[in-house]
Image (cartoon, rainbow, N blue to C red):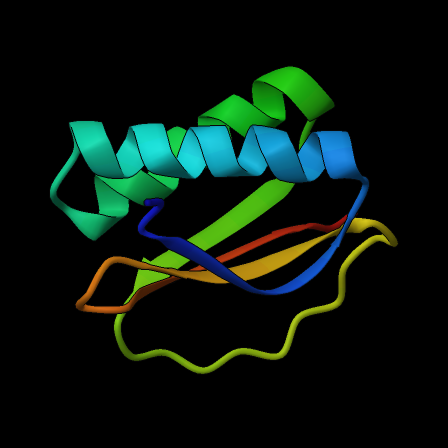
Length: 89
């Protein structure tokens, strides 16, 4: 059973699958939120070009402007650490 729970997504299916893989790998390999976010950003910038943005944490607010088909909000694990991934610019 996946620990990833996608709350809101505006992405093509293939991009969403890349996000799931990248997020799961980041959480498996890193413990600190900043390293998890950095790994996801690096993966997306490499595959889909810059400028992807990632926030990982338990308590944050946001209002973002994103490109169409370039937004994902999810939670991970029992502690519900949240992931916000979007592309701008």
